[in-house]
Amino acid sequence: MHSGLAHLGMIVYTLIIAGSFPVVSAITPSLDAVVLTFWRFLSATLVFALMLPFAPGARRLPGPGDFCRYAVVGGSYGFFFILMFASLRETTPLNTSTIYTTLPLMTAILGAFMGDPVRLRQGAILGLSMAASLWVVFRGDWGRMAALEFSRGDLRFFLGTVSLAVYVLALKRLARDESKVRFTFYSLLTATLALLAAALVQTGSLPFPKPSVWLGLAYLSVLSTAGTFWIIQFTAVRLGPNRVVAYTFLTPSAVAGMEWAMGKSVVEWTVLPGIAFTLLAVVLLQLPEPPGGRPPR
Image (cartoon, rainbow, N blue to C red; front, side):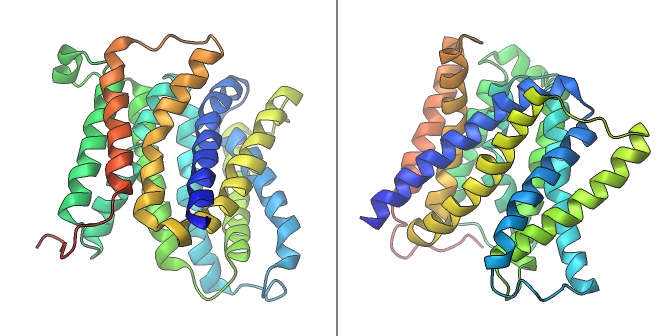
């Protein structure tokens, strides 16, 4: 029963994350990427501030060493959103959502450099997802693949995905014996203060978002940050990290469906094989590990 609810939760999680790509695309033209990221982080910080009084250890103030941890976590997360806002001015939600599926592979590669071995089966499936992502980005055009014709927006978001992989690893390695709500709040707060300084230095002012932009920021703060936070808390302990990660590969299909339903784009038939392979990767990662599987030496 709990396993079924966890899978349902991850489907909801996937739809929320997929929805964030067209939402970000819609609000990016109005403000500078750093300014927009500041308002997005300020909104999320306020949401977690409402949860903080109910978290264990809420009254204990963090020390200088704690703020260093929070700066790494919040900084890498904030840099991801700056690049996401900037990239969606030059590329499409489908491209960015597809590049986003490389996150598990990026995390595994960076983790391997830090001493976390990657199992052969897991590496093969993640490599399959990477190939499928490239297929969608290049629209199945072998000529563009051979020429490596990434748009500048694609390259920016790829760097953002690397930053997000650093964030994922930092979450695991820098968390201490403290409430996840407390840890998330102070990480967001530290990033928000840094973004405030960066926005003032870069623009000399802090433009206030339009009402239509606030609707998008509310989606990103309440659903895409707080909502997914609680979904992951419920599902990760019931499905395990590999099965949770698998749902990342559904994001491009969900984005393509949303874009098609809103009449904003037509899904070209040439990208369908790439989407099909991402779905296959989801199915394969749901299967149990074979007995006796060992990480490659």
